[in-house]
Structures are given as structure tokens and as C-alpha cells.
Amino acid sequence: MGEFNITIQPVNKEAPYAHVLDWFKDFTVFINEGSVVQIRQAYANIGIAPIPIEQLQLNDIGLLHGSNLLQHVHAISPVDIVGNDKVWITIQTWDGTIFTQSWQVNDLLKID
Image (cartoon, rainbow, N blue to C red):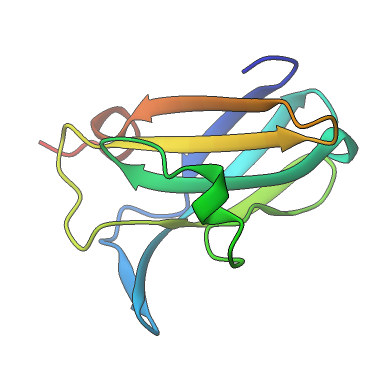
């Protein structure tokens, strides 16, 4: 993922949960290479495509947060996650560079 090497792990295998008007699935994000201080903003969502950062930055849902090595995220999710969905992480650095990476959701959550 550009200058970053990250690993994500679901917090549990439960279905997404509702909060106010949105649905979320929680993940732990490990920053293996790169530094959190290089990140201006970072978000996670689940679906067939990443949500554009211009839309994500309008509020704080799906925002990664935590410490230098370990981040937590309430990833924006559809009500029902299906096997062809992906987990997307979008990172913007302070110079405006945007990196996007995805993982097959069925590899992370073992969805049939």
C-alpha cells in the first residue's frame, strides 16, 4: 500500500451492527511499515468499491483511530456482507497522496 504495509483483522465474526443511520463492522488495523504520523486521514469501508475520499471526509464515520502501531476502525458496511464484497482501506498522506488497498471479505470473515 505505497509506503505502508498494513494488516487488518476483524474484531469478531458477527454480522455488521447498526449505529444511528449507518451499518458498521469493526476491524483492528496493524501498521507494520510506515508511520501513523504520515497519515492525514484514513478510512475503511466494505463493498464492491472504495468510497471516494471526498465523500468519506465529510464526516468521521469509517475513520481509523488509535496508536502508532495499532489502529481500530468501525468500517462502513452494507447490512448484508456477501462473498464478493471487499474490505477497502483508503489512506491520504499529508502531501495529498492517496493509497487504496482491498482484501476479499470472504478471506477475512470466511463467508461462504
